[in-house]
Length: 243
Image 1 (cartoon, rainbow, N blue to C red):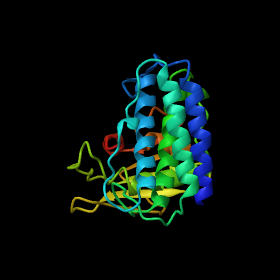
Image 2 (image 1 turned 180 degrees about the vertical axis):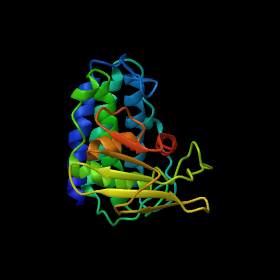
Image 3 (image 1 turned 30 degrees about the horizontal axis):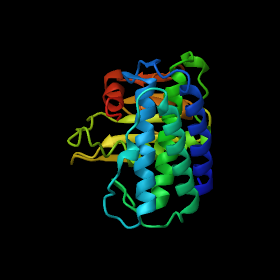
Image 4 (image 1 turned 135 degrees about the horizontal axis):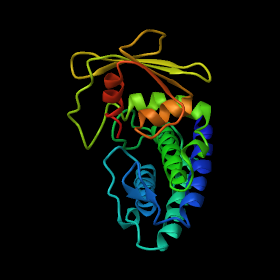
């Protein structure tokens, strides 16, 4: 995907998140164990941190100020809109090749563009899940979801600040997209890492569904239209690695 496509997705999904959350701050997000306000505080804090990274220049770890801390009550709505606007301004004005701090992978602004598109899409879905039946929540865009599965494998599956010593399952997992091209085979490399290939094959477990459903499943979210084949305990072990 292009930087502009990532930016467009961040803009659209963050607007939908703000709309879904504005009048539902006390709503529970059951699958996260958060309230809507806690979800907004989280993603707004992420936006503030990324904005600081993009505006600071250089690859040193940023010193994020109080702008990353959400206020109490309904003031969080305006706070989130401000964090969103600042992020979009920073993303739209920076060259994707500009060096900046990232917590893993390439230290470029383009890395953050992709990361924010993926994370915003997931949390937009989370916010809408607070007031919408599971099967009626708008899916993640097909192209973005497919790219975000790759991004998940390259970032979130390999890096976790909460669980840095994770062990990968010994059984292999095959993900098969049902609404377009896209296949992934995941296998522990036996040395503490994971090997991921794009191939058709038979894993110890297989998960089949749309790009959006596969992305949500990978992130540990509830799904409503997936098929799981083979050893379900292997599939569950891979899904349990979600952040």
